[in-house]
Length: 145
Image 1 (cartoon, one colour):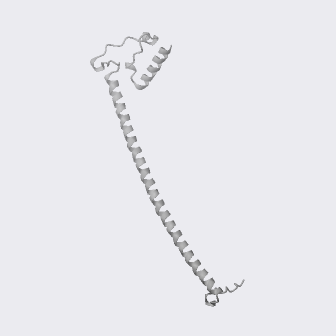
Image 2 (cartoon, one colour):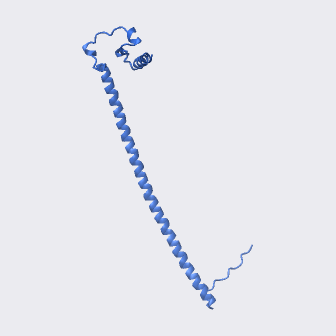
Image 3 (cartoon, helix red, strand yellow):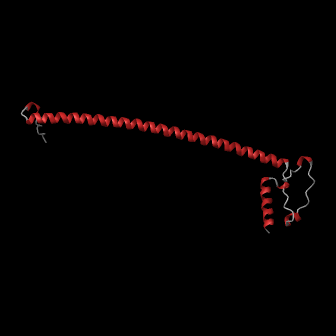
């Protein structure tokens, strides 16, 4: 029963691919007994030891070449995408490093400026407390409402 199902499945597959004329069911199956004996092959349709015809081998070679070509193109496309992603990553890392350095420099500048202003303020406050009224802060006039 399994051989008959396999033979029927193979026949349907070959019909779909246009190669049913070359199909020979396995010997000893019910399907093989119902098929008329094949015509004697002509030199143009001489089958190979594996039972394939030159046309089938040609089609197989053509399909294999097409698939190999698509696979090579897919590989090239993939390598280009990987390369582009690596370049983008390197660019992003460079931009991040530059922006971080600029941020850190600005932070250091502001901290230095704040420290300088605080030191000046502390010196003025100490001088004011010591009696130098010129260094005291001017009173802020009240704002009218």
